[in-house]
Amino acid sequence: MRHILTTVVSMALIPIGAAAQLRWYRPRPVPQINFQNSGRIDELTRAGQLYLSLADAVALALENNLDIELQRLLPRIAATDVLRASGGGQLRGLSLLVNQPAPGIGGPNGPLLTNLTAGSTPTPLVNTNFSDLALISRQQNNLSVAGGAPLSSGTSIPQYDPSVSGGFNWMHQSDPQFSTVLTGGSNWLVSKNTNGSIEFTQGFSTGTQIDVNFDNTRFTNNATRYTYDPTFNSNLGITVRQPLLRGFGIDLNRRYIRIAKNSEKVAALVFQQQVIDTIAGISRLYTDLVSLNEDVNVKRESLKLAQRLYDDNRNKVDQGTLAPIEVTRARAQVAASQQALISAEGLVRQQELIVVTALTRRGLASASIRDAHIVPTDSLTVPDQETAVPLENLIADALKTRPDLTQAGIQVENTQISLKGSRNALRPSIDVVGVVRNGGLAGDLNPLSGTVAGSVPTGGYGTTLGQIFRRNNPTYGVGVQMNLPLRNRVAQADAARDELQLRQTQIQREQLEDQARLEVADAQVSLQQARASYEAAVQTRLLQEQSVDVEQQKFDVGLSTNFLVIQYQSFLAQARSTEVAAKGAYAKARIALERATGSILRTNGISIDEAYRGTVSRPHSPAR
Image (cartoon, rainbow, N blue to C red; front, side, top):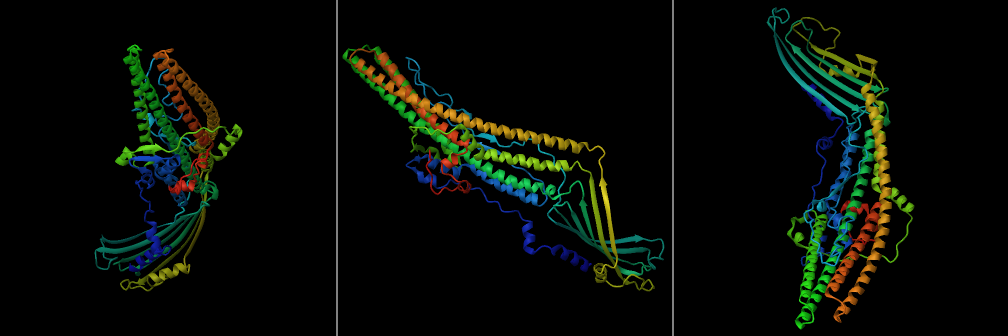
């Protein structure tokens, strides 16, 4: 028994070393997530103020944004599918959801605070969207074009990871006997059976399956008529199964490995798209924050004008040269300007909270970050001249550069690879099976039997092993096993459905490309319109400033009324706010065009390696 157990265990340990034994049964290390912010945010904070440029905002997003951190894990998850497929397992797939930052108070293309009054009566704007969750919630974009229903698994693939299985059994058995002839005086037949077996199994990419089985038995009993006691019986056999139709072919059986490696590329491209969407969102939020701060300055200037008019009117009333009702009207204008300023400052604070949440790992959990006010150090500018790039060139750049289009093409390729398994499952199953086996039998002569040794060799377990390796008792066999479905409707349905889903994937890939063309064209039109609107807004503001100056001069000499002065001041305030909004709309249209063409990372001087590491040595100012 001890010899059998030792042999079985030693054969199990031959292929592997001690270190490998432990490594194979331990989980691979996965690092913990660090929820501490990078030191950059502390460096930029002074006296409760966060001095932030657009380049700093982008750097903070790469270092701290949790949407980017979430997608950093995707390539590692894809690598586990490669490992799983290399061992012969099915794939678990990837989530291709990309998160976009919250729209913010200004929204992706929404207007800012542009209406102080649209008529002769002051009408302050009261904001009603302070608690609108749509403005502060992240948006999601699903980059999958393969659809929600998975493809059929198709023909099963071999298990590439070799496995060793075995067992050891010992049994003591006592059977009552009606006669003592067999046992030589006892009415109990007592036997002891010790069995040890080990099996090695491995599959190969050709579809070949190899099984090696080694079985050993030691048997003793108290029967006097048995010539040998104890007896040793051992068998070593090899079985090879090779499919000829279903399950045959290296390309077929390695399809999961190819899909998993393609999925690694998809994961890297999805991460790149996440960086693009995050940087575009952060740039948009920063632009809105700058615009909102400029609008606050406009409202403060409007309040100063209204306050000056109120003071002038009050002095004239005191001097008896103006009716008291004009003081009331001027005071109403001051109140309206104050309301507009309060609303503008509230919007700035809301936008600050959204920006800070997007640039940190724990959002508003830290009181110092929560209470900090952002001081944008960059201003919005509109270039004197626009670089004219033909739409065809922009679309060509987008189709070549955008990672969402590239990964969609890989998804189509993966669907085509998977379809091979569905089509192969239509074939009949015809396998060639070969068997080679050698056996050994030996034992010690039973002195109670009173017989002489026969043709069975005398000896112990070593004698049995000697017979096996000398091939004294060989067994050979070869055969063909066939499974021929007579209707095969399940496989036909799976193959047809998978091909139809491939067509859907191709259509969705084309739709995504059409959407990219539309986004580029729309962004170009929006940029042109935003520039024209900005130029018109500048001209309107200049004319309104002249109108206010003229009307104030006329009022000072008694040739105009207080009502007209208030009206023209309101028009000027509206024109200034419109100019701020138009400048912000231009900046956001530029960001939208850079995102649509896939050039926003290049514009901001960001490399994917830098983004994946989450460390930015030196922020780069956007090259616009």
